[in-house]
Length: 383
Image (cartoon, rainbow, N blue to C red; front, side, top):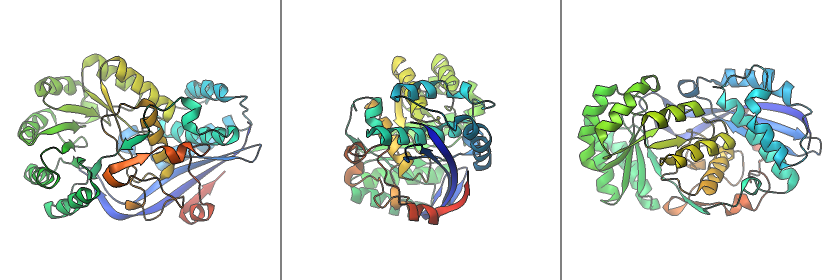
């Protein structure tokens, strides 16, 4: 299995609806797609969605690193078997000259393309490249963007119709609006619904304590990234203040493995929000999960807004291999994207469920890319 050609695409895909949180509003997505062509003619596809405010990477920086650092180093690399591949990925950061440790989206896009190509070459699903899955059906949560109460109510009723009873709500603007939206969720989804919130770094320590003290009375089970990642020293104090009444889920504060180590050692959170693109691919994510499990912490599968079925597949694989995620996000498919790169998008169905059956029955990531659709969504191509 020898890498013969490397290509990079920048895709631009409009959304069906706008998505808002305290930091950004999005009506479309710009994503990086890597194509690796093996000597045997197999093509593997990988994806990453860089967010500068998360890992410090942008579309431009990821593009440049792939073209100038990764592609020249990996071209003509050969792999005898899957163990060769895993050994290579374990040492990836040290193998690529000039690659910085924070360039996690760079690794994610390349790694997924490599795993996809290897799986196709060996006629194995990526799940089976790793291990036997621990769970076959994954239950996904709904995500409610930071909208007016009227719009939020409409979104919640759509989730109710789908039988989804776990939601994450974007907060961090007007506290009264946040409370009204949470009350609407409790009213529409019922007393047993699991409601969590995501502040996207909106508060300082004082604000976090005050606002969370107000929001606790609505049985919110978790707050995600309440304070900026740069304020990591405040997280242990906030966790102590919450005193087990609410989880702290770490997102922007949890990118590199060293971030996870610091938060674990200093008791800065109780949940790792693991996202395939943000955390550098499946191999990195599985290491984070192992660290969390060894220290009695929980994990949830997160997602970048606007993922195609490639990243959805990778997230589904992670959830299936670990089997103990307390929440799962993503898999919106064409409920959010105006178009996906496959004719059969991976997306959750009734009750938020998505099975691994399809992707495990196909080689690689299990996503059959429609090359005509891919071309139509491609804004730029590089090789």
